[in-house]
Image 1: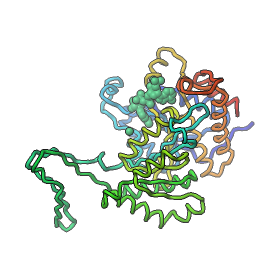
Image 2 (image 1 turned 90 degrees about the horizontal axis):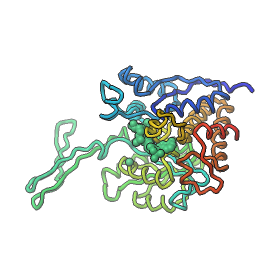
Image 3 (image 1 turned 135 degrees about the vertical axis):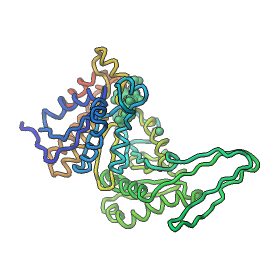
Image 4 (image 1 turned 180 degrees about the horizontal axis):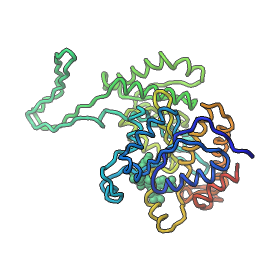
Length: 399
Ligand code: NAP
Ligand code: MG
């Protein structure tokens, strides 16, 4: 058999620790035997970020904008302990945050559902994808403590210098607290476009919920922007694709999500997305089974696993333990990127191959072969623990 040829290279962002080991295993066992793999490679491992003073992260983000599709390995976000461990000259920022900022992207997180792992919410049969608006609100807020007798006002200075004052509260009976937060039309619009585009890409309904009945200006503005963009740009494409856009109050959205059987995209404001993504991920079973896609308003896609570099496993690996971690989310980052590349370049063999790998993964788990993390959760009777490499080999045997 001749290898599948690629046209446009995807951007490949290598990473750290256990996931860097898994990364190479996936390329060796799954991809290179079948595909003449051509990527534009950027090493985002912490050592190279230090060596390049983080320039490599910006280069990778720019390359992603240029080429349209990227696949990223998990990377260390340094903290004080990592600065020590890696002798860093600086506490480099999170590569994910850098890439997200350069691309102005929205992150979509979706669980991979397999036989034997039952969601805690028994009605959920299909994945629920959460889109979190990762800009502003309380994450860029200004807060203050107000002593009793103090007063808080909202002062807005207009472009012409005139000011408006809004009384927030007179703290004459008690001391208290106050918070000022903001968002921008540009950011909300990017978020809305990314959500509508991804819904079309996935052929799934889009839900959005905010607290517009209480927050008549702030949250209502989100609702209005979504409605306006939907009407002007996406309505007919949604109709043609047989999907719908649905806005409801956030409380109602939460109730409907629990009662649903899944299979839709749930757009969330920043705080809602922060909290709900943890709830949804836990309810679906495991962090090791969450995928993550960064989509920008121009339709640029970056695929990765939602989990980190699995440091605890890596330290055991350095002591000689055979890798036992679950490669599924990282594998699906690769298949996601290859499928998208195949789709954009019109190479059906590439898309078909990536789909076959995914199908074979589901079959492998159905046959009872799972990594340790899934073994403890699986209700399958014929279950059996395999190492990371054995698991990948089983997948390839199933193709
Ligand atoms: P983590 O790497 O996601 O791992 C946390 C724990 O979850 C692991 O110790 C393991 O539990 C379990 N786990 C996660 N993925 C697994 C998999 N594929 N297979 C089996 N078990 C898995 O989170 P962390 O330990 O908090 O963070 C480690 C590093 O990753 C940090 O330096 C952080 O900055 C970075 N990080 C990067 C990203 C990213 O690049 N997107 C995201 C998050 C964190 P057990 O040990 O109990 O087996
Ligand atoms: Mg959170």
